[in-house]
Image 1 (tube, helix red, strand yellow):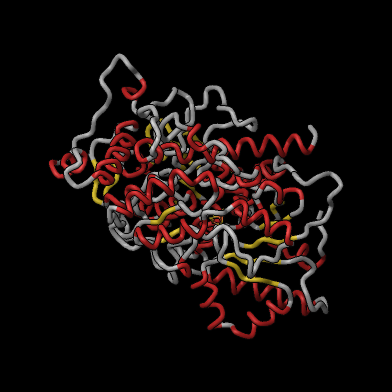
Image 2: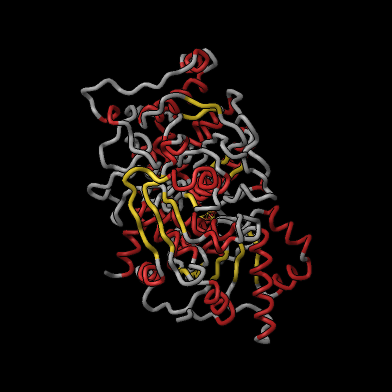
Length: 536
Ligand code: F3S
């Protein structure tokens, strides 16, 4: 297949996903007449059939349609159409049968009197609409009740594209009625950074056209209780940002990597919500109780036996698990020996790389690792569901899975022109490790500068930590052409037009999945950064 056709197919899928992820949030709040929650069996949905609401708005440039991707593996083929027979919802749970069967009364969760009063409009119009949306969403999945949320929210409503206009309007209505999140909340990275990610004027033009509502969205988050811009990150749970609720806390997050890490590493309880649903639950302080929030929903349908000879490539390992399990929960054995007995700030990046790959190459919202993750420490192999399946991953399997990753660059392009480090965002430890390695390699090779612009992605607070503790290293890296940015890799490298000008290499299997970037091992990343060549 010709490269441009492949690109077009990939972009169609993105467009469809963008619309689908927002569908649930749009059901009630949007100021349009839309059908009540319905979902066809086998179609990927966490909500309603309102995709048209988010279709191209007047004046929207093409490249602005393809930048929004927060939800993963929604059962769409490369043509953007549902894969026949695909049952996964991306939420880790099947919609309740009654919701799809017109001959039966729709499922209805039990509400308290206070919740019913909100639904009946006794606390205002906007709270009633929010409650209606959240309750309908929960009913679709057979939720039995609403539960009170704790900790703090995190939202993936972070890009001010034209397609977001209806959702921005809906939440502005909430802000105008004085609604605020139950606790100050964190937000995914801003989608562009014109200071630290160098671009040509044509590209800057595309960015401004692609994200014309960014300032309005940023202001909206201030009104709804969002935290400062220096906390913007998908890695909300790092110590510098500090949104790491205690084990067992119910939250309603959407960012797939944060959901995945929160459920698995922190032991919190959240479903894989859609963008917008996370914020609605935050405004209510409640979420429907189903799926990954329940003991039953946290049982593992897969036993993953990792039998590599040495430490596995964490990104490919996660990719393999995601492709196999899709949205089922895996129980992983054989990797605890690479963590010295516990998850620490120095080794959590391995979990992050593996987990984010399970969540993007598949739709895994929770995994257990024997002897390491909180649920596994409490229950061990009792977490395995009756009739679980087994998947053995050895070196040959890792190689086989890696060999399926396509090169999406045009055929005449042989060299990278960017290097991306950190998706999800870097931890402080990763920044120091990568920074030291790059500086030492430059010195060893007698080089003053990296061969291609190299961007390290992390929250501003994490970058500041690095500045304070390693000022000389930071200065040397910056002078050598390494920049530090708090933006999102994929919002940059995934812009439609950028696939024609940007040919990145990445250490993230998530970035690989969502852009034309080529995934490399750490050693090969260093080689590419030093030489500007694509290692064999
Ligand atoms: Fe974070 Fe953007 Fe990657 S939100 S996980 S840097 S796609």
